[in-house]
Length: 182
Image (cartoon, rainbow, N blue to C red; front, side, top):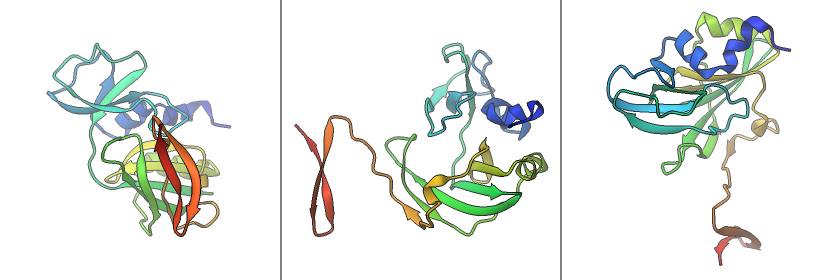
């Protein structure tokens, strides 16, 4: 069970600000016109639900209640798992170029990023912690692990549902099937 004083880890806006990132809630103007990540402050389901990147001139009054804006980070997306205070897994996600909410593949790496003291305290306090970061900047903290790699896999390629298409299981050699549109 999470302690009341640690609930801030679930609020991505508070997490972002505690880590020194530029961002603010809907209704607070941006510091300068630019592209910003816009997403819900709290989303325990993960999977980038509700995220977008949009150009904002100044006002953020148009953003939905409960959302925030944050500077855009470029670079490698790493997902780190900690068990009893020790890093046990690091994977790199390769984002889909057409849909920022999806990844084309994940690969196990040997990266061991340094964590700020604020986050080190959380990692040693809770038995299982997952941290998402882009270019060594933490964007999310979860009190769960990455179950996708629990079986020892070293690379995963997600197969995403394609709107308007149906998957047809039709093995032939290396082919597993088709996405068909009717």
